[in-house]
Image (tube, rainbow, N blue to C red; front, top):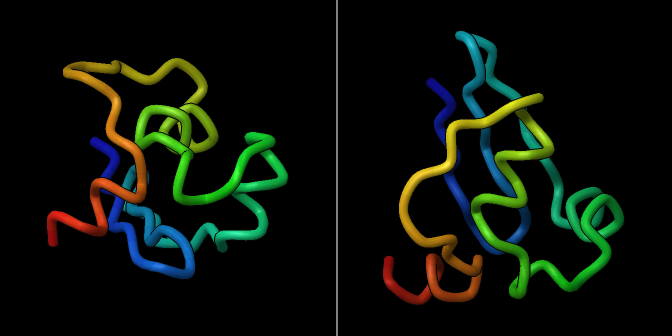
Length: 67
């Protein structure tokens, strides 16, 4: 199971027991759009080779505004 924790500067990730950070700039470069417009599904695709995606994708802007 992969855990993503979003904040204004990037995402803290726990993947297969390993914790690491994806910085906002890296995410924007990898996906090709501004960080607030990136979705959680897109970030998950960076982390996992074949992620199991469920539910509707949520934009980072919406995730941060709901916390």
